[in-house]
Image (cartoon, rainbow, N blue to C red; front, top):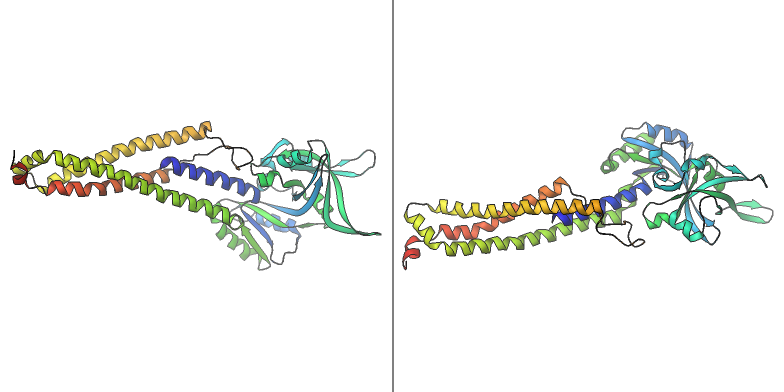
Length: 377
């Protein structure tokens, strides 16, 4: 039970960490869907807000990116490089290159055109055939008016970094540029889609969100990580609950072994019990003997089980013994996270179930009539 609970906790916590790194903990945006104007003031207020560790404005766009081999639709995210790094996941995910280069555009020596920097996902880079130093073209559906009518906006970007989050949906569908470059591409200056926040306690985002709304007014709304990832998070939570219930049933079945052992022992010790009773032993003392014996069996078994479960879980996690196929799961191996609360739950449930299993055979021993037991001796 400790091994399975550790596995379920590991899956949930590692997957949750990956989800949070992509969505962050709390987002502030306008209720009417319009972009945030004057976002710098909002960002500064949120960075000094209680329980908010870091805040950063961002601008999202759905664009087409074209590389050397292929093109694909991606979500382009503008990063405010003046905000704390903690609020921008690109600094955590980048495995090649430097995200700080997003703030350093180049100038094409031949045409004099401005070339901004971009960080793309590992899977996306392989799909479109681009690597660090290559030029990719980003085409935005938000067009601009020309003598020939409306035309899409497009700009060239130089790949300055490759990121890998571990989540295929991010690594194949996301790219990062500076917030200023995103504003130029969209044709909207000094605006942001939302402000994302990192809070000090992810399990209190509802309370923190209500405080933020109270301070900023009814024109805004907040969306937290629980709301954005509700289906996945609920599924993981229910999976752990159902696994715990199933394993408790298994422990109940295992407790039948204690009942069987004690019943057989009572049958074998009829003569000894009768002699004890004829010498003055009370039914209560006989009852306590078999209850204590059943508890000793359960305590010794529980201690051995805890030691084996905790040891194997830590070994499997540290050595990454159970590998997962890449591209199928968001994790490369099965994580095992042991928690004292889970171990305490297992120990408590096991001892209680084992104690209950000793009652029936112990009562049989206490009710034994010494005369009947010694009749044929």
